[in-house]
Image (cartoon, rainbow, N blue to C red; front, side, top):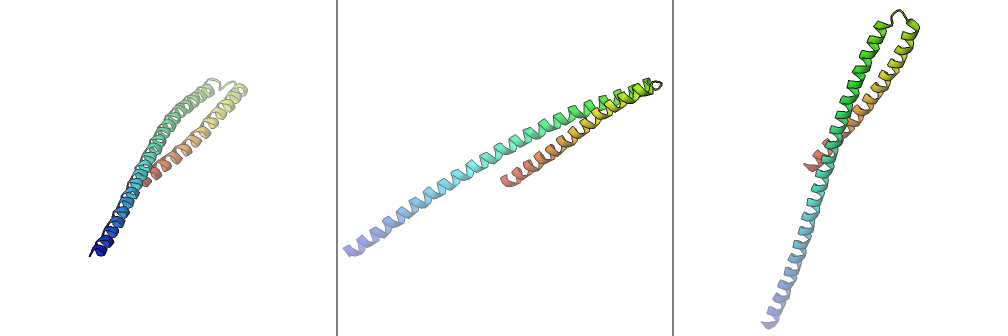
Length: 126
């Protein structure tokens, strides 16, 4: 009976050790999961901030493009009789407009990439 009791005590001790190990592993997994969620949230916040910044830059460039287009139109109407000067100014303004359009497309592509990254982060977070 004493031998049986010692054997049962050993089995119980082994089971307690296994339970403690499993609990420690579960705690470590929960902490790792929480850290991962926190990191995803931080990345998503950074991505959203970048997306907002790009949207603001895009608005500024669109406003400049509108202003340059207006200037171009004004110059063209005012200098109708001075074709050579008007043509030179038009080419200059066309280049400015073209440059701004390239910048807009670049910013739109960056914004789209940020939106996709943000969506991916949100999906990962879910």
